[in-house]
Image 1 (spheres, protein in one colour):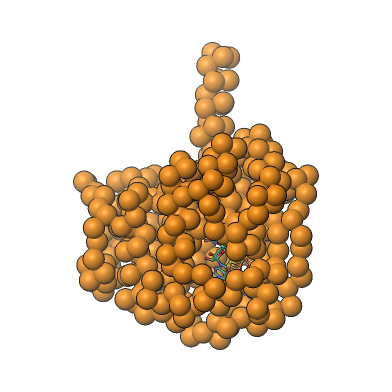
Image 2 (cartoon, helix red, strand yellow):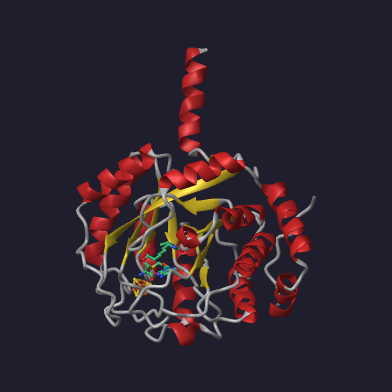
Amino acid sequence: MQTETRHDWSVDEIEALLDRPFNDLLFRAQQVHRAGFDPNRIQVSTLLSIKTGACSEDCGYCSQSAKHDTGLEKEKLLSVDDVVQAANAARDKGATRFCMGAAWRNPTDTNLERVIEMVQAVHELGMETCLTLGMLTEAQAERLREAGLDYYNHNLDTSPEYYGKVISTRTFQDRLETLAAVRDAGISVCSGGILGMGESRRDRASMLRELANLPRHPESVPINLLVQVEGTPLYGAEALDPLEFVRTVAVARILMPASYVRLSAGREAMSDELQALCFLAGANSIFYGERLLTSDNADEDRDRALFERLGLSFEENAEWQATAACKRRASA
Ligand code: SAM
Ligand code: DTB
Ligand code: SF4
């Protein structure tokens, strides 16, 4: 089946996809998914918070904002050794990408130097590297590319129309500018959003439109379900209908056929059946490991059992596959 890659979607068209009968929507998403991917392989990344809490931003969902009283313990920027130890453990458990997150509005150039050492050390373990550090200048993005960074995560989070209801200390346009700096530097883009923050279906359509109409689709599109943290303004937000979450994953898959769609935060609270529907809708990557950044993730044993039940397997790292193929050739 031919899948189109378009960058000219309207919100109405996307809302019409979200409105489709559930079975039709999932069938279409599964067709698109199968045209581009092995439907039984899931890419696995592990997260580490390298600098925790005391963030100057006021994101209404976040445990790490200094503006919300969430009781979170703050932590300064970790040492390179601590990061390497965590990355090693993640690699041993099967993660192919290591994603390091910092509670900053933006990194200073001094902080960036230590982060660059972390990127280089994790790269040497044979893992893909990902950072999420807040806003970047063009020069900082260039510097990270030179250091060998593979991915930069920077979420649009919600629609441009709803953005001001969730965050007041930066604008949607600021987010787009960082994404452009990352893309122009030649780093792969990871960008998605959070569902269940009280936004409407039209907001979800509008957020997906922003992602799908970027000059190039993000290589990775995380779809997070809000993790409700006591003390944040969004604590107590009305829970999203789980099938609406699945619909949004399916539409992300249809709009961005070649992107990895990541079933991200919120898996801990999801049933196995709901996660299975998300994989059927075209999600093909997850965060694996006991913690996300500051909150608990789905248990590793539970994930392994779920993969077994669904006949899913972890996608292997291309570099390891190449090394293994090389060794096989050498011994043949
Ligand atoms: N400070 C940087 C930034 O905001 O870009 C990087 C770290 S920030 C924690 C990374 C992303 O995590 C946010 O953009 C948001 O999409 C997601 N996130 C944070 N708290 C969340 C929550 N409670 N539930 C779901 N996703 C969340
Ligand atoms: C993304 O989209 N989700 C991850 C990652 N990118 C950095 C973060 C989820 C954070 C969930 C709340 C927490 O653990 O603090
Ligand atoms: Fe800070 Fe990022 Fe949390 Fe916003 S999402 S408060 S920028 S750590």
